[in-house]
Length: 367
Image (cartoon, rainbow, N blue to C red):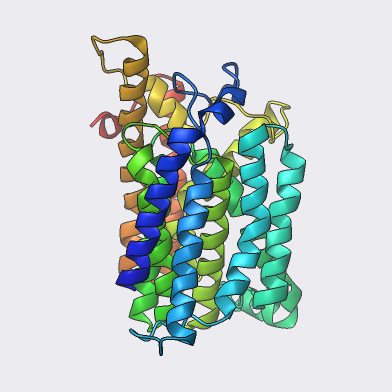
């Protein structure tokens, strides 16, 4: 596990460095007028390509260890890992194409992430076997297609959730890294070393990307990076629950409640305003944190001031994420408690959001 993780980190970091060196001609297509833009200059948005290469090579090395080298470390990464890579490809390549051209509409990207969801069911037999409620579990048992539908929705939707929170240096990348390590920890607790190896190597490749993304902001993950994180984490979350009956289905739900609820709330507030959910805006929680809380004064040029404020925004959301990750890891098998923490997060988020909108920033958010 250490070897493939080290390889994933180094390959992603080196490939990301090459993109930074040679990829600036693709950055100019990201228009200055876009509301989600909070940086100065033309920055390459092809970090997802570096992440995909680093992760793919690490996974391939793990397969080689299993099939050719007698599986040192008992990782048990067989040919099924190739199926995982095939599932990731439609969403990842679609995101990378959008990053390079800025011409792939939301509708086509939804189709591609949906294709990844369908492939997950077809190639991996992915399904949600239970929800932790007796009545809901009975319904899933009587109508297995519901569990399949949830799996497709998760794989198709989570990439877009990560794309929504991907707005500041280190934000989506660090959230993905934390979630991957939390999932890997619980996978090891239940003896699922193969799944843990995939997650740790994905976290390592993410770390290689973050070398260039935070704090200097020299490379962005783009849609491609968000889609890789979303698909892999969705696959791992459902697989962990499907393969290990001790793991509550609300464990990954609590881990991912921040990007998931950000997406649901964004759809709600746009719908009530009569705006299409696919239209980008600058009213997401992390953007309000940037505008209403991160107000430090920097006696330097405008570009450096924007960079410093950008960098200071992400730690607020890392802390917000840890408020859900810590109880999720501590109580990963306790469904009622996990559900209570999910409800607590939703209430806290909504109260904090409306307080910030009304310029009544809670004291705990300022510190």
